[in-house]
Every structure is written in structure tokens, then in C-alpha cells.
Image 1: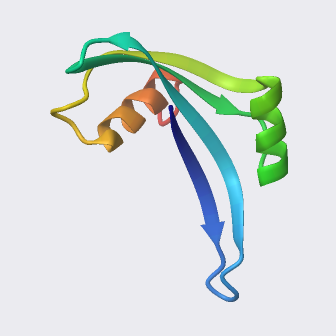
Image 2 (image 1 turned 60 degrees about the vertical axis):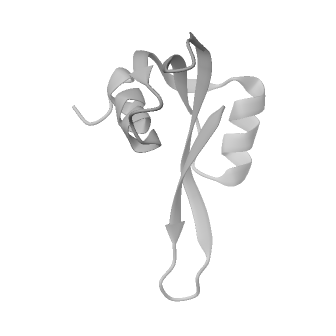
Length: 89
């Protein structure tokens, strides 16, 4: 599983606040090509997001099929996952 966290880091005191979290799960494919389920969770803090993950409180869910995992950097998968869930449109 891949966990993508969006964090805000203060330029003043270095304090970190987690704003969002996404999970990408491998659900099939081959050694070279993967299929994935992606989910974003409800909340805007570490506590809320962790609670949402444990309760499976999902805001959006999507699927990525046929990702060439050996040929493409993980950021390509993250971009496809966001698009599959309707973000950035």
C-alpha cells in the first residue's frame, strides 16, 4: 500500500499540519503492470485522518488499471489516482 500525505509546514516555526491523506492499494495485475484502488479520507488533521482510515470513512474512491509500474515513477500513479477520483478537473 502507498500512503500519500499532504502536509503544511510552517516557515516560521517548522510546525507540521497534515491536511489530507490518500491510500493506494495494489489489487492485481502482473509484475510489470499493476491495478490499484485509491481512496481519500475525511478529515484535516492527523487525528481525524487516522480515525477516518480506521473507520473506512472515504471521501472519494477510484481505480487505476494497467499502470506500468516498472516504467513510470510513482508520481505518475499518484496523478492517475487523483484523476480517477475526479480531482484536478
